[in-house]
Image (cartoon, rainbow, N blue to C red; front, side, top):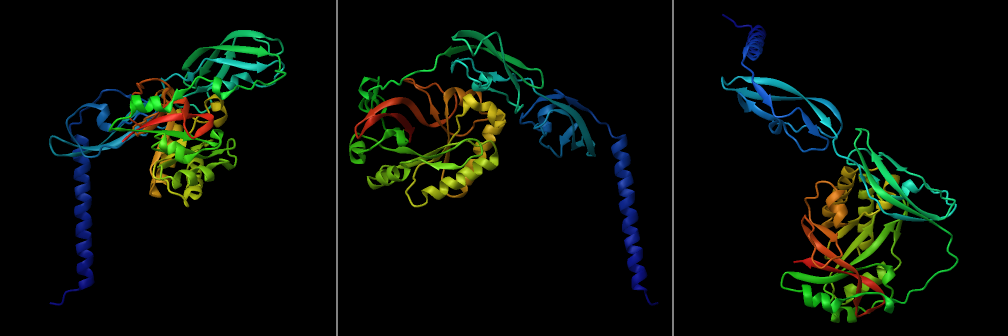
Amino acid sequence: MKIDKKRLIIVIVLFFVAISATLSVVREYRQKTAVKIVSLKTKTVEVYEDVKVSDLISFINGDLVTNPKVDTTTLGKKEVSFEYKNYDNIKIDYSIEINVVDKTKPVVIGRTINVVKGTDEDVSKLVFCGDNYDRNPKCYIKGKYDLNKTGTYNVSFIGEDSSNNKSSANLTIIVREKSSGSSNTNIDDLESTSFDDVIEKYKNKDTKIGIDISHWQGDINYKKAKKAGVEFVYIRVGRGNGVGAEYVLDDRFVEYIKGFNKVKIPVGVYYYSNANSKKDAEDEAKWILKQIKKYDVDLEIVFDWENWNYFQEYDLNFHDLTEMYKAFEKVIEKNNHKALLYGSKYYLEEIFTDVDFPVWVAHYTENTNYSGKYKVWQLCSNGRVDGIDDNLVDIDIMKK
């Protein structure tokens, strides 16, 4: 008997379709009738918290098959779906509802502001006010002051976010007459820290002592600096000329890097950033790489963001800052260099989020108690180093 192959194929296909449909019905029935027990520790998580489904579950009658990460980048209620296999070996599709909230207060820093009488500046914009989530929290002054009358005014500075978290700090506004002259301070009259003393106190088998410079340091005798014990230097390659503005090469960068390369002192570079997005940070990194390609840069390329007194102009939250650095770092490392984040101890600990990478910490003290990991410690800005006679200089300690 001759077999009709086409009909045979159709029969086989229909058979498998029927089997598949049956299995699907069976699976659906087993899922509906299966015992499902899932207890949660909490249904509330903090914005930007690093959370997976397993972190939320206190008990489940089986084992997770999938363990997705919860999207905590926006506020509000979210449905999170996952799959687990119960003790009867039945796969179960399950979902839970969680609520992403912001319970963290904005950060405001009280300080003293000096302004000229009659200024039309919004002085509330001259004080640091920022939030972990809101890019534009309400930042305002509470209290009486008169910018058209000289005097000292003690007021409160308030920061309030969209989740009704509020914080305040004391603010002193000093309104003064416009200065009629300028004062010239002799460098020899300034309190200073001797580079020799730093070497004596901090130099050991695990450290190197160095400096960081910009055009403010003036003329440099590189051989004298090397003889004085300078083991490394970070040179400012440039800066941003305002938010979204052009990149400006440091006036003496080329001169400095050629000089230190010539005497074989290891060089790193830093860039004073005005980025307000990851794209900006990436573009800054690309620009830096173009400026250094002719020179020996053995140390890190440093992201230096410290526009704190004008933070409100940048439309950033604290999470954005870390994300900008990571974007910068990715470009730098893709081009076979290492990156480093520069910041003062306070801002690294209180403002940047999830800083789990080495940093260059500025902390002007005898022994830093910075809580994180650091590669370089800037211990003063008033150093005196042989070979740099026209200005004081930052002194740094590097961990080997």
